[in-house]
Length: 107
Image (cartoon, rainbow, N blue to C red; front, top):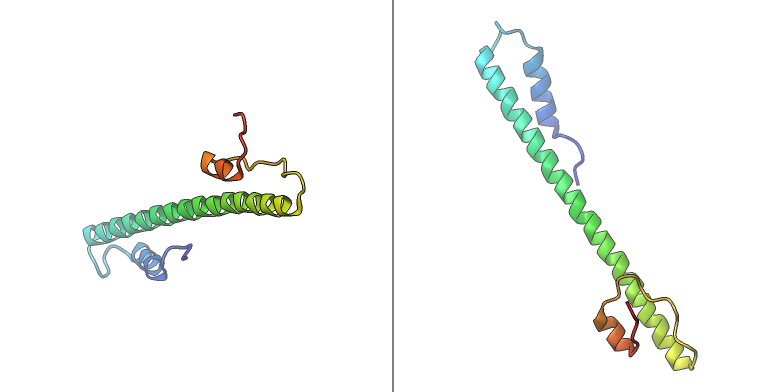
């Protein structure tokens, strides 16, 4: 995942902002080009931020799923060995998971 503004955009902004108004493009053309580049930069930044949020949500779901699966595995091993069930219930264990375990937990 790219974390900075594309190289082309940075180069264009430096080139356009360092030129004098009398050389090359007109002031209006330069302004419009810079405005377009600024819009593209913000748009890119927004997409990057959203991608980071989605990745973080996904990692949180994976961690929660790992906790729940770990609890189920520990419960199965304890049941097979005739030991008491583990006392720790995952924070967000839903009724389907608790139902599979055959336990009722007062919420």
